[in-house]
Length: 252
Image (tube, rainbow, N blue to C red; front, top):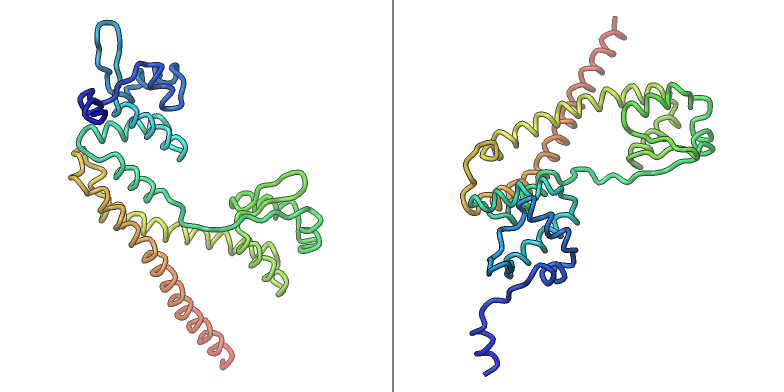
């Protein structure tokens, strides 16, 4: 009998204070969301505004998106897209897939004493400035933090083999420029061949955002494979050409 009465009562509704409490926010925040058009209008009964389960679900979604780093402006855009026929959850998944980090580098911090012991008199102001300009280090009072332990370890190993630190940084700067150019190639490929529909004004067909997310998940490792294979093949070509040139000079 209790279940029949509950069903007859219909969906649960909330006043402003009740909805805010259920969502874990203040009434001031709730009203701010309404002003930003993040919530659909409530049902009015006289001077009382009634909110339903859909409003609570919307507030919970907004909270989750804020925790994941989305801005209110971005959330407004996503919700607007969802109300135009695109599924908000799928769009969020696609956005996360697009901006997900490609690198998994671990930063490493070194004190000034450790740097001096490693690089000696090669650790000059010019070298530090070049490292800063390339975006690899941040300087603090006790030393520096490098964005990549692997790159830092490689630098230390090269210097230990007799390669000057300034030469390592010069090669690093050039390699970074070429790496950016390679990244531009793959970004353009993904943008033009996979994500072209996002540039249009028409809503994506149902399920299209989820399909694009799955494509990006499959393509990301392929891009790294192609870049790695192309670099190895290029090294083969360049090393053989350089070796042949050296041997030709020795013969002459």
